[in-house]
Length: 329
Image 1 (cartoon, rainbow, N blue to C red):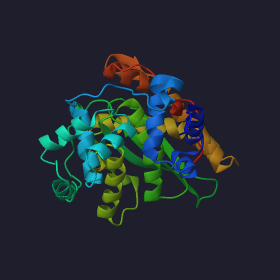
Image 2: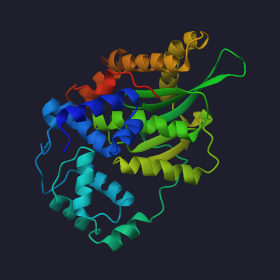
Image 3: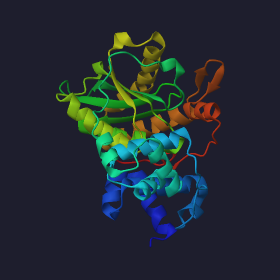
């Protein structure tokens, strides 16, 4: 059994070198990694002691937990209440096996056959209409776009991939040297999902801005891959593909303001002979500073994105390791 110091070493490696690479090195699942990370953030070193519980099992689950159970059933229909309970623990929800069974029974998914049939239902198709952004809360509506920058040579381009939460304005950005769905999945799994899990986001909408130029020849296959990643982490948002003209003036302005913030950070360094890995770290530090300290008005409230999230949700400002540590990718 792994002791708490070994777990802390793995957590630190994941924040510095990337979760996927670290989990493969130590032969552990990503969900187990995030379970340790969440316990460490809330309880410190004691949270990494084996067998320590972060909450008391309950017989009636809140709606958020029910939603997590449903998304896990879609990904793992052959799993019974006990296995689903373990998966829930790994993404930070400690409830009893009987509670999981009660959820399954209430949804008429108490048998394997019913769960398999349920999981085979067609995934939600991309929607053309815009969701009701105004009623969404912190962490419920994400926008994704790509910003293209020139390099030292005319033929060189740098692509900034961004996932931006509409309500809180918490942002995750990484830069790459190519347009690829793999780059989007890297941003999602290595940056956006850890942030979402740490802050308790319950993402309902994921909106792709189509003018971002993400190559997507087979949209159905791409959506299937994205849903699989999200569902395995306990999320199941509706996906939208939107054009710029479909955005409200407010959303378009938020996008432009954030893009200018990233632009001011990147452009001076793209024209210097710096290693691309160093430019990535410079942007990472800038986005970290933006989330922690860049204050703007939310109505009459002046706050940084993380400060606003804390005020709006009534959550304590316990910052996870990703808020401080440089992570190579």
